[in-house]
Length: 538
Ligand SMILES: Cc1ncc(C[n+]2csc(CCOP(=O)(O)OP(=O)(O)O)c2C)c(N)n1
Ligand SMILES: [Mg+2]
Image (cartoon, rainbow, N blue to C red; front, side):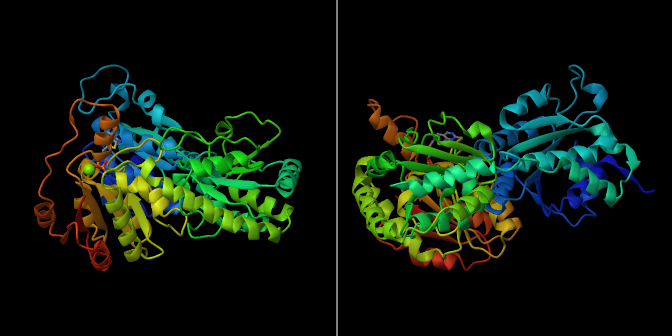
């Protein structure tokens, strides 16, 4: 019987779970785990700040559907990663966050020990599905396996495990693979499938619909293929939430894209007699408006808490999105006549939305932003993953930049954290070494996490960073105008010289002036071997 330490038990559990990449920052409080990692095939990625570590794990999970795993120290390591957990919690991204804590005997009251953090589990529960402290060394493996499964089950979310130092140092008998397999079977996701009667009824509603419409949210990516076929079969246009951008190709003739914020789209939504909402809680959009569904609502979600409205003659289907959409696809018949009328209708709505853009975004440089997005579109390959920060060009990109694949447009949708883009791109790139990855960020947001450049360089990741430099928090300036501030306040930024910053990291730099074309610079940057900083004057 092999004896292993608690630290080795953590790594053994992660290896059994086939975790290939682990994002973290070492400290004396988690070195027992790092010691075990030195002999592991798991690739460890060293962050520069735990918030970035969390976003890296998020980018990894958001683009792959797998659980993103992060390892931090107790105290400041844990508090630093909370913001990224908040973002992942809001967006239903599965993360496993492992932190440590002082030895069990010091955890009862205030001890004054290094990195002490009282009531850590209570604190973390605001941004996690669960936060647990492991009670003994033998429990480490079952707790890790269960936490990993929990992160993915139902509505995916971060799950946190805290392991006291003494448990990492103590030894235990290593469990066999058979024991691990039976543990996994016990923790497997038991979320059931929708009642077949309900599915039949929902299919009949869709079949009878005069003007059906589909809303796809962040939980719809797994069902992307069936969803497209259902939309084509019934001639039902698809409206995407920002988290679902790419779930149906923006260029598809039935795709209304991410355009709920346009009056032309909202009017159309209000006239739809049957609305199928998949993997969305129908939350408010960027401008604070929730989708108004006047017709009958069929809602599919893995988590009942997404069912916020009453049923009103509609149906809530508690089910896996792909299974339920596949069943609906079976239950409806082809309506080719509708496609002929609805294709021009979708085109018309998009044209009307286009005309609304200047009223919606009253940016003085809107035309320039649109031009830049067109240039980016020309340079970006179809399989690109675009990691966006909360910057004005990204809001315009919702409707103005076409994305062709699911899980390829990253945006801090609901929690809205500045600084997500670069570290999330690092995680995405590590999850998909074969796919191009690009960052779009503002000068403000970029500075929230620019230290992640260090990780991107160390990992030798080719990531072009398109930084829109308007020398400030541009979006906030706009809001100040709308609030009738007596003068612009607290939103101007004295920025570093970005060319010197690129030089400091030893990476290429390009500056795109007003008259320059961004496309060739971006296309060239995508062929590089490292991050490339492209500063766009706006
Ligand atoms: C962590 C965090 N702090 C503050 C904000 C508020 N906020 C939203 S947009 C914004 C300005 C972003 O500036 P920049 O990244 O330069 O983009 P721009 O608006 O100039 O395009 C700020 C400060 C936020 N979203 N997240
Ligand atoms: Mg800015």
